[in-house]
Image (cartoon, rainbow, N blue to C red; front, side, top):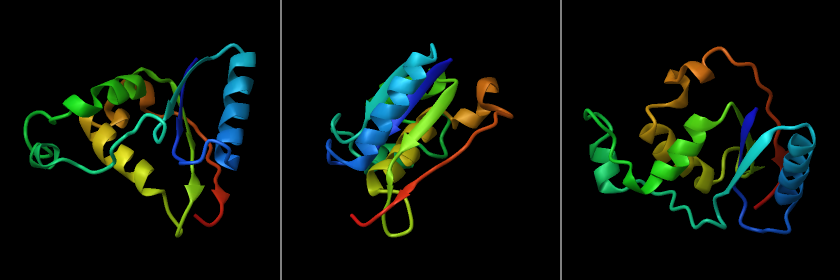
Length: 128
């Protein structure tokens, strides 16, 4: 199975990164193909650009800057999100990833591969 692991934490020595590494090594040990997107390390910019926002309701989303992220998301058969819960929600970095990347690919739920899939979630609560 093709697995995409998305990490949204600024500190490489954090619990989130340790949990992500454990998930990655476990998935690989069980024969899965794993791709990791460490958003902070990659310098992912979470803010929508004016062009992206203007294209939300147009025929095509202006997603030149997020195309590689969208490609990896659409290629994945499983998605693992690793992030801290800060102020009762996602970190801004991950929220921006949802806003920019999911819009770029028309929303993965429109892909037949993502329809009617089971899943599970988990989160580590903590302060920023």
